Length: 221
Image (cartoon, rainbow, N blue to C red; front, top):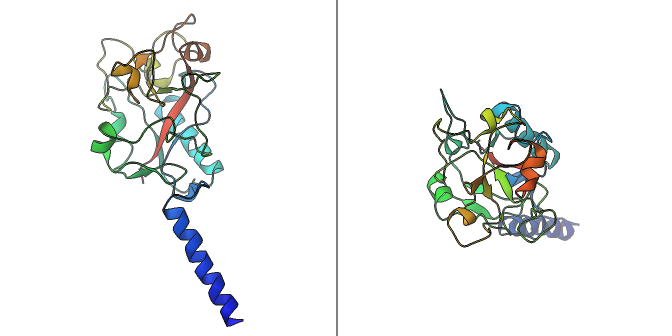
């Protein structure tokens, strides 16, 4: 009996170790980064930052990782503008399969690990990228490449994430690919503004340029 008990303890330690070093199965309990599998359904109208954070929290909770403070990587504009990079904590951030995306904000803004293979949703699934149907790699950020807010010269946040009508939202490419080899085409957080026949901020507008109103979600604590 003692030998069997000892074996079970050793086996448990081995399984835990496999999780730490990148087992094939997701381990959502340690997840601190994901691309949302869904948005608001109302284009870039997320209900402001609070509504966007709620989307992240709800999806994380459904995946078994709800016991953290989840924030959407979004900037706002105008008085009291918020920088996306300032709302996501200090890092490090790990995806659903244990891959460290970045150790801190400096690495996130520089040599991060965001790619088609690593920018997974909360279920550990790859997000449709360029070449897939439908393409969904346009992720809402409203941010410059360094994760900071735009000025007020042009709307880049669809009225601070409250509009599904006229305006624009800056998006990044979760698969780091685009129609050419330019830096914006390969940017994870600042590739191009949304646009479309409804004014730029509707669900249909986001779909027309390769998106679905998805978010980058980070555990800030």
